[in-house]
Image (cartoon, rainbow, N blue to C red; front, side):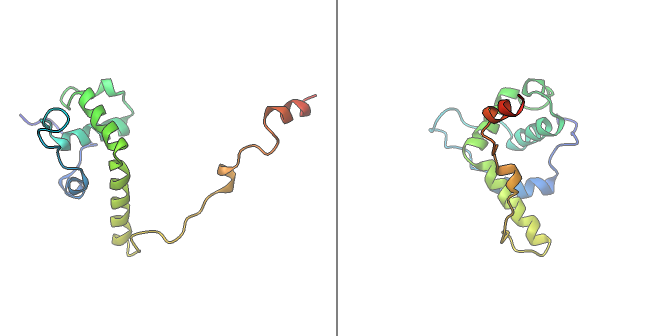
Length: 129
């Protein structure tokens, strides 16, 4: 039985872009059990959490178990999958816009990089006297 879709579910087109970027399932003999969950449903659940802001444990029951979704989410973070996916999607969007795949320059706002110039709380207490 197929579940009702959520607004945050991946479309077929979005899944066609994302699927080739994901790591293959681990072989049966390596680290743990074979994959028994639909990876597209894992991504649907991750997007549900990130879009709605719900807690992992509050995932709807028609999505995979929250423990499984969280495990994949952490694995994707630790293995650099999130970074690879966002880089690939950024490149595709730039090419579709008629631009080079990678930016040629970057801007760093110096105000967001600076810490305090006064010396922290020592300078603040002297000024308040």
